[in-house]
Every structure is written in C-alpha cells, then in structure tokens.
Amino acid sequence: MNEFPIERAEEFHELLRRRVPEKTYAHCVSVAKTMLAMADKVEITPEQAVTAGLLHDLCKPMKPAELAQAAAEYGITEDLESPNLLHGPVAAEECRQTLDIEDEGVIDAIRWHTTGRAGWSRVGQAMYIADFSEPLRAYAGAEEAREILDRDGFEAALLFVIDQKLNQVKKHRSLHPSSEDFAKWAEREFAS
Ligand SMILES: [Fe+2]
Ligand SMILES: [Fe+2]
Image (cartoon, rainbow, N blue to C red; front, side):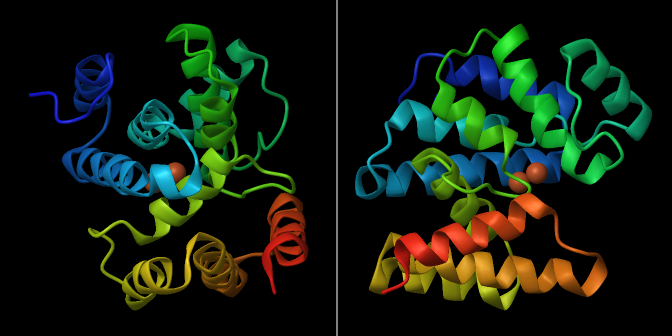
C-alpha cells in the first residue's frame, strides 16, 4: 500500500524492508510521516519530506567494515573513523549514485542528519526535528519537541532539538565540529 503521495514510495518501502530491521523500518516511516506533516509549514515539498524521511537510515544497520567499504566505493573521505556518523554520508551517496535521486536538498539532509551543519537546508532542518521527535520516540524530549513545534513553531522546535541532542551527545563523547557549527549558526539565525 502506498500511503505516501510520491511516485517512488513503494520502491523505497521495499528497499527499506530488505535492508533494515523492523524497528528501524517503523522509525523511517514515522520520520517520513512527521516530515510530511510539517512540509507546508517548513516550505519543503511532499516528495522531499517522504524521500528524505524514508531513506535517511537506510545504511544504519551496516557493519563498520561494510560502511568503510561503501564509503571507499562512493569516494567519501570524511568521518571514516566513526561508523555512528558514517551511515549518513554513505546513505546520501547511495541515494545519489545508485538510486539516482537528484534533489540536492534530500541528499544534503540525509548526508548531514547525524550532525547537522551550518547553513543547512530546510529539508535537513525538518529532518533533524522529525528524527528526534517522531511519535515512536519514547523519551520525554520527543513529546516536548512536538508540543513546541505545534505551539511555538518550527524554528523554536529546531533550537530545542539541537539543545537536547547536543546535551545528550556531550554526555558520551566530544561534539563533532559540524554539530557545534550548526548549533551556533541556528542560534544566530533563529533565536529571537
Ligand atoms: Fe541516522
Ligand atoms: Fe533516524
């Protein structure tokens, strides 16, 4: 069943079903729905919302050695030491080079979804909020992010999610420079 209003939805569903475990599949569908629900507000197209949402974690289950090999094949040279982060760039290049997705907003959103980046596209910003706050996320911050999105709007929700995610990450490891740049940039752009 194609529950999404885009031509390639069924193809992407099938690809995901083959590649990721049930829990990740459900998460990706939920991110796509969440992005679709905010598409008008954020001024991204339904196609961008669904494509980026469905495919962002396509490479998440890959083992470090597989990710490293795919990265080499796709010519990726950054974040090679960090499989946690590498599933974004590898998925982005698979979308571009193998699935022939040409929308740079979609590629860019998937590429940077684990860290964000300064000057990030609207598709990326929507992805960042949806990845954190889709309704299958059980932690308290997810619900609060959804409430902020409804009550205070997209930019307030983005700042909240950045704050939540960076605080979470800082407990375990040092921040990726792109995450720091993203946080500073968003603060300048969106904080009132
Ligand atoms: Fe991810
Ligand atoms: Fe995700």
